Length: 470
Image (cartoon, rainbow, N blue to C red; front, side, top):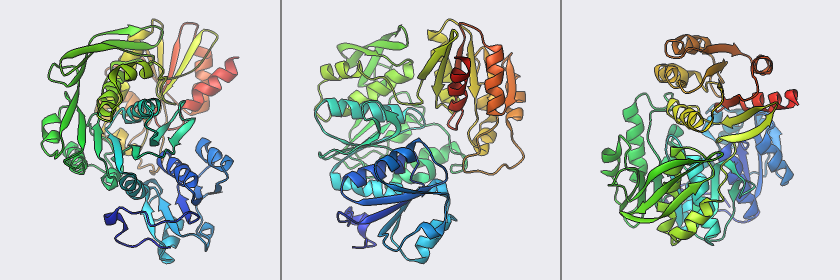
């Protein structure tokens, strides 16, 4: 077989059923979904990852061979193509071996972009916050609307029983990540921008760098496509100025094509609002998931699928069934009168939005158990983080989750605790996850809500707390 060097330009995958693709970092959100889609499309798939995880276990259950650790001996002779994630780093031994063997090598987003182009109707959902939930909502609406989409999403959906779906139609819904500019490899006919904030400071030294990259992403959309974007984004005018495609907006203002008014909570954990399309009232939007940010996600989803022929009335019915994505305001359980919720929020804006939602919907004492994600993010956004927790009654800080980084020695959760105490009256640095669990077992009381928060493994605290308290 062999992929030619002009493969990306032609937008043809160049593979034939039975070809062997080896994934480095196969347990990640994007690669695990992509691996399953390709296996279900007739290709042989194997791969490696650092540790055993929920995703790798699911892949193994589907018959995909997984190697643990990264070792160049894993790269067998019958591999046709190597796919990797940027998160493994350029010095990964398997990646170096693949280059030595002169195998075709593609970052996951490159392969994803070619698949989108080949499918014909790529829908890419980008943004600093909300892209996973918005991708999931769009996928649900297209599935229920009979559009049979292929889906790659960065979280687990109840409706998909996982993070992917292999469909037979031209529609391909993809969660588009800006990390290391990887979403610039995609081929969207419709681009959705939920919002643009400064994040990934290890890749984007300034906010302007982030905006410039999103502008490049928007420029990928052809004139016959669509750009769906939040009307009130601070960078709105600059972003839409580069769009070759017609622009659809969502938000709160009268200028938005899709907007909600008269917003109110729905017990126990929902929200609703009056829905307007192009200034005309079209019904009441009711969600079982909480927060104004989720109303915005739903507006973006409806604006998108309405362009693809799913009627508004049906969308409103389908969204009533949406129960969220794993690790996005996920209720883990209740024991001894203490409710445990887990959320993926790891950026100051997402933290503020999530805690404001909790404060608005829950009458009891709120414990936020936060695990900072990455040293670079914590250092560069320290001021913003320190002021993001005011809607929590008690803030518990875990040690920083290093992920792909090494400890530089100049930032820690104790540093964050010291800075946050300037704005919050009850900040407690506890550090180790086991110590945090034990601390919560001693200090919480009936009526409390414990929210574990962060992009690392902080969710384990809530799960072990529930087990220990039974």
